[in-house]
Every structure is written in C-alpha cells, then in structure tokens.
Length: 364
Image (cartoon, rainbow, N blue to C red; front, side, top):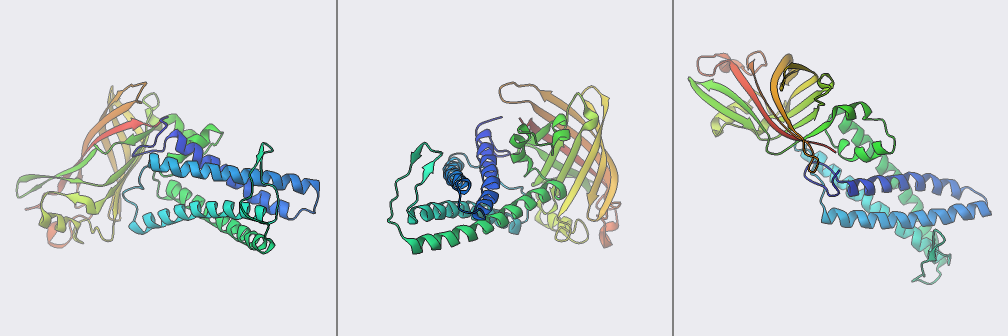
C-alpha cells in the first residue's frame, strides 16, 4: 500500500489518521459522558486525566491529518455523485473537522480556566496561557458538552452515508478507507478481499457504435465508474459493477447528442444512469472470459453476457495492472431507446455495439 494518496484511493498515512481519529472519538465520547456521572473520587480523577490526554492526542492527530491532506490531497468524490451530495459531503467533513478542533480547544480552555493541570499521559504538563476564570470555565464546560453531542450526530451521519454508498449506491467510497480497518480485524469485506479489488484508471474508455444512414458512428461516455473484483485463480468469484453517466455521452455532434439524451432515447434527465452488473465470470479459454450479468438502461433491465479478454501484468513495485477489452451487441428497441419516430430503423439501425477498454490497477 502506498504512503501517499492518489486519484483513486487513500494511502497508508491518510488511513492511519482517519481510523486513529475515529478510534479516539469512539473512546472519548462515551468516556466523557461516563466520567461526568461519577462521584468525586480517585476513579473519576483517573478517568478525567485520561480524557485530557486523549483529547490532546486528538488535537495532534487532527493537525497531522490536515497538514497531510494539504501535502497529499485525497481522491475526489465519484463523478456520478449529484452536485448536492458532493456539497453535503464536503460540508459534513469540514464540519466534523471544525467540531473536533473546537471540542478539544474548549476542553483545554475549560481545564486552564479552572486552574487544573493539563498533563499529557503523565509525561509533561502544558503551561496555562490564561489566568483562572470560573465564568469562562463554566462557559467552556457548556460548549464542550454541546459540541460533544454535535460530534456524535455528525459521526452518525458520516457512518450512515458511508454505509449507504457501500450497500445501496455500491461505489468505492467506503472501500477507499476500509482496508486498514480490515487489518485490525474487520470482516465487512473479507469475502471481497479474496477476489481482489481493481481500481479502474482514467485512461479507460467506454464506447458505443451504431449505424446512421448506413454510416458507422462511434460515441463514448465521458463519465463512468467501474467497480471490479477479480482473482485469476478464482474467476467465478468475480464481480463487475459499471455505472454510466448517461448525460456524458458524446458522438462529436451536438444535435445528435441532444436527440440521444432526449425523452425519445435515453431520457437523461429522468434516468441519470445506466448500469451493468455481473456476479459471475466464466472462463472461455486462457485470457478469455465472459461476464454473466444484466444491463439496465432507462427502467429496463435485461440479461446480458459480456465476453472480454484480459491481460494481467505482475509488478511487485507498482502493483499488478490489467487491461480488459470486450464488445457486445444489444438492440436499442429492446431497451426503450426508440420512442415515437425514432422507433424506425431505416435511418438509425437497431443494433448498438458496446465496447469496453479498461485499464486497472490492483488495490493494495
């Protein structure tokens, strides 16, 4: 696994920061609520001192995480994600970052305002830059408690969104951060780990070919996401999930593209995505395979087997890479891409060939 982030996945350092902070937050929140209900005693004192130390550790981890993010930006959000959801994701992330900083600083100010020592795991004490101030201490205490509830709510939203992306939208957002958690014993993706998760590179292409007035026309989809799990030793366990932004189609002709996006064809405003899913891959011959699955266009889903060739290049240094290519023919009328006058085939033929050319790299 690489140390730095790239355009498709988080590196080891970002994952360490992410799950380290997550673990600290999962400990700090219940610890803070638990110790506040304890009577004044040595037990409470020990918990309070632990809470202080862990809070300083959160601050250090968050500072490191922000600096590392500046030095090594993370992968962008999936291109098929709606703009409102991208904005919501950014706001919730930065809101959680801000809340954690505010929470720690409020806690530190609370300790100093009540003239209490701030000791980091018994190793050294941080000198107070402010004088004792009880009203300030009470104010910071209220803020510390309220922000704690806010963090709990943001964390719950963050987890719910991650699970939605993984199980409902079936993109790779959770996977990009999940690998390190599996090292610590998570089992969420244990079955998928065997198959191997491949990151599809931007150099990949998804094209379609059809005939217009006896002239061959080639177009492509500029934006699509492909989730590929494949182990050449166990191809039957392979899975393919391709989501296509229909509005991104391009045939180098604006009028034709407008017709293709219209209600009579793809109806891109209503049906934003087309999708191909396969949960089984058959071996045809060495290097030749067939994905057994289904294609959904508009609101029509039909079985579709996709034959493809695959070449894997082993590279211990940069990671294994793969090149896959395949082509399959469909009937546009069967998928509802022929409404009204466009149902006729004398100008636009019924057969459409879909061609994939994928470059992928095995995720470490």
